[in-house]
Each structure stands twice: as structure tokens, then as C-alpha cells.
Image (cartoon, rainbow, N blue to C red; front, side):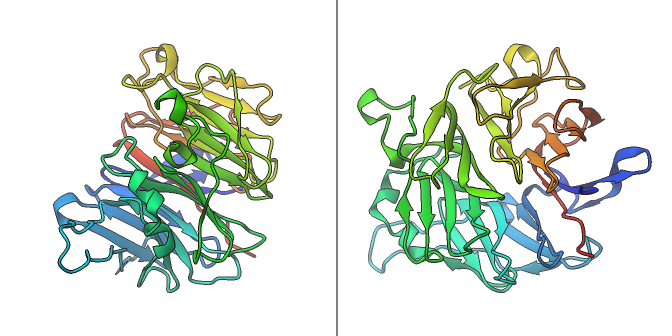
Length: 367
């Protein structure tokens, strides 16, 4: 069970740790005042990464080899220049939306999902980045569009622990894409998803689907879960086909998702009211949990605010540790809660943080 968690917020990187008396926030804040859009604690070598979205000053990426005591600025992804003589405007990196480590057999390999819609790979711990050009150059990308942002973005990256060349990504709004050769070629694999925001004749088009968050079960990577814009979807055949799970209480809409690391039937969601409102149902913050693959759900609320709650959880605002026991939930209104019993009970750690963009556990050090 992990005793340390990284919190990326609008005002810096904050660490949460478990001590003798429970969970508490560290006094020091890294990158104070700067928005942290993505965090990663690499389980392979213990490196920490923090991506900053600095607006006028651009995107920055920092790496730490000593758990945040010191930081080194590394490279950031860059898009190709337009063809000479064309009228196209150059693409500009808006943010690094997610960071994921490569496989256990790929030391130093990182993946980055970005806005606008680029997927990048680094082989040197972030010093340099390579755009996955086959995905970037596909004609289908012209049909992608932004969900909550003006441009499409890649927010979910899943590296198959059985085969590091097999990677599955989720795009808002661009569906689900997979590679089986390390990024050289890509296939669209969102059959069965449904986009209620499109005209009926286009609702099933795989390329315009909006999976808000996409995760596989590390212990059973052929099983994937998606918190979609208009519901929850699940695949049991490696994303070749998806089926919609109906009657998710109290709402099928939401952004955040966590999947148990070994039990593919267990997943957690943070429901909300769509579309324009985007607040908890009935102003009561809850977490919905299934333990049977979506056939039934429990609504977990003990320790969470049950009146006047306007807390929304962003896509990366919910995480479960490698033991599948501890959950951390951060909200847009600065609330932070921890559960040590899979969500049955929640402890409020803070109600006055900056908006929480992302949370991620630091895996325990190998013996």
C-alpha cells in the first residue's frame, strides 16, 4: 500500500503522505503558484515528473530523482512545422495532459498525451520527444474536435504490461486508438460506443467518441473501462468491442475513473450532472463503485459532503493505489478526500486547496 501521493493543482505540486496519525499534506509546495497539469511517479526508477501549463510562458516539464528535493527542467513535445508555402498555422503545445511510463522492459521510455491531440514518446526520461506521426497524420484526425477544451486532446494512455509495444489511448473527442508495434501504426477501436451529442445517424461513429477517461485493468489488460461523455462503457476483448453499462447511479455522466489493479470487475466513478451544469447530483458528492463488472453499483458517500457540494472531479482527479485498497479524490473546488477501504469511508484532508487537476500515487520503493 502506498503512503505517498502527488497532487497537481492550479497553484503548484503538493504531496500527501500517510503518517502515524493518518493522511496529511506536506508543508512544502513545489512550483508554488504555477498550474501543474500532469504528474507521474515512475515505478521503474523512482523519478518524479511534473508538467506545468504556464500560459504566455508555455509548457514546461521538470524531473526529480530525489522525491522533489531538487528538480531538473527537461524537454517538452513540439509539433511539426507546416509544409512550406501552405496557409496552415503552426500547432502550439497547449498542455501536457497525461504522462505514463513505458513498459518494465523499456527503461527511460515515457509517453505524453497533449492538447492539441498529439501523442509523443521519449526514450531518454523526457530529454527529447518524438511525435507519433502515423496517428498525427491520419486523415481521421481532421474529424476530431475539442470536448471541454477548444482542441482535441489525448488524456489517457495505457501500456500493456504483457507487451510494451501495445498501447491504447483515449482522445476527447477522437475515440479510442491502439498500436501493436510501438506507435508505428494505429487502429481505431471504439466500436460499440455511442455519442448522444451527435445526430442519430452519426452517434455510433467511432472517430467522434468522447471517452472522458480510459483505463485498463493492469492485471487483466484485455478489460478496459471508459467514463464516456454520456455513460460508462466496458470492453472485455482488448477494446475491439465496447458495450454500454446502463443505470449507473446516480448519473452516467462524469470525468474521473479508477480501476482496481488486479480485479477487472471493480471500478470507481465520480458522477455529476451534465452538460452545462457539471456539479454533483443533488449537490451531494458521491463515488459509484461496481464490483461485478457493471451489473450493479454501490453509491459511496460516507465522509463526503452531502449538501451544498459543487465539487467536480477532473479526468485525473481520482486514483487507486497499487494494492487496490486506497483511493484519493481531489476536486475542482479544492476538496481532497482519502479512503483506505476502497471507498466505503472517506476522510476529508482539506477543503481549501487550489483546484486539483490530477492525483497520482507514488509506488512503494522496491526492497
